[in-house]
Amino acid sequence: MKPDRTKVILYNILFVAACTGIFLFLWNAPPETTARLPHDSNHERFMDMGKKEAEKYCNKCHAPDAIAPLPKDHPPKYRCLFCHKRDQEKM
Image 1 (tube, helix red, strand yellow):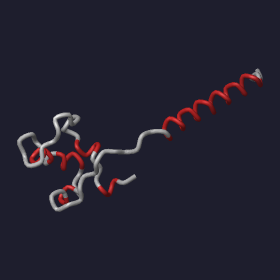
Image 2: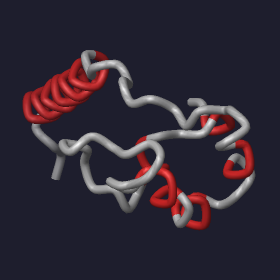
Image 3: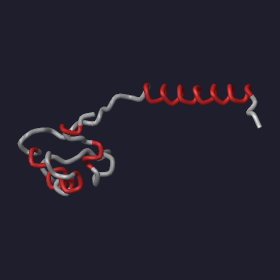
Image 4: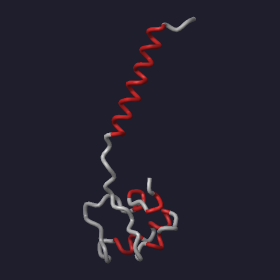
């Protein structure tokens, strides 16, 4: 059985329209605004560690009563390097 030519054309048009919609959605995404992990003497030792290993130390300085506490409206604090990328993780 031979496929109907108009159905094939319609499916191709729908496919191209869907791909174009996805492309435009991704193209118009907002720029990355999350601060990167600072590359300073305080954070240098975490640059070569695995993410989960390095995240174990974040709370020592960034706890509410520590040296550099996080703002109250900061999102969940257990996955720091999920958002705050290190320099070698540039895209």
